[in-house]
Every structure is written in structure tokens, then in C-alpha cells.
Length: 240
Image (tube, rainbow, N blue to C red; front, side):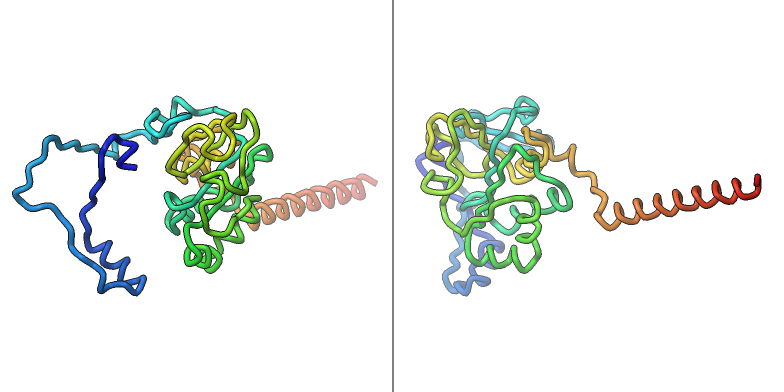
């Protein structure tokens, strides 16, 4: 992504998080601390306070065609794609899961989920995410590039709008140059899968009523109705 941003190369300092990950993967001995010298001089330093930044979204057909989410809200989406190497981590899938849990997928929007690795795929099954994705109506693919490079599964039709968490949206990226690819976060994709159009996840984050609560509510309504009927019958008998 550094190249798309106009740089020749992008360097990120390693830290304890990097070290812990390598240890978890059985490669702790491969860790090397890489960080700039304390005396390093930079041509320019850019600091961004993301806490004050509205959710962003990339419009077709370029990753740097970025605008505020509010400018895209309401755009009809035919397919939501979550996953691959960019946003297929367990944390990403968890964000999606927490928003769609107990909700219904919009009937006019397809949902495809692609975990980044076999390990993550198994973790989604162990945590119950996989079952909820299937209940929601999503198609869960085996780990791989898949729709991200337009080689199989999820190739869009002419004129379709796709909302994806992948890292590129160049024309024809998903296998059809006549489609339109928007890029967003897992949270925005989850909200959109529910609404059928690009939506702000902050507007759908209220906790839905569980099926158990709905059943209890309907059961109590039936009890109240039956009591009302019995009172009516008793009143009729007294009149007689």
C-alpha cells in the first residue's frame, strides 16, 4: 500500500506486538528489532488524530479516491466482501460478527467472507463466528485471494456495486471491469450487509432483541390475550 500512497517503500518499526506474534507462530527466534535511530531526521512528519476522523471510504476506481463515509451513505450495494490478507484477521471477523449477530442480511445483498488463513478459519469456527455467518446468509470461502483478484467466487456482474475490505479497487480488479468497487472497514461492511446500502455502523450498533426475548414477549402477549378472553367469558356468564 506504500506504493499506492506514492512511496518507494514503506517501513514500520517492529515492537513487542511483532515479537509476541512471532512467538505465537513458533518463530520467536526470528524476531529482530527494527527501528529508526534516535538521531534520525525526517523531511516531513504527518500526525493524524484518528479519534476525530469520520469513517472513510474509497470510491471507484482508485484506493486514494477517498472520501468521508457520509458522502457515500445510501449507495446501493449488491455484494459485500470481507476478508483476504487485508481485513481477514480474527479481529476483523470479530468486528463483523459483533454487528451482524442476531440480525438479518438484506435480501438484495450477497455477502462473501474469506478468512486470511486456515488458523483463522478454525478460530472462527471455535468461537461460533462461522455458524453465525452462515445463519446470516453469508458464503464463507476457504482461505485464499479468491474474489480479491477475480479468480473465483464473487465475480460481480455488469453495473454492480461492491463494498469490500480488500486493499485495491482498480477497474476490473474483481474480474469484471464493468463493476464498481468501494473499499471500507469491516464495521461499515457489516452495517451495509444489513441495510443493503452503504451505512454508518454507529447507526446500527444498538443491541438487537434476542430470539429468546422475542419469544418471551410473544408468550406474555398470548397469556394476556387468554386472560382477557377468560374475563370476557366470566362477565357474560354473570350477566346470564
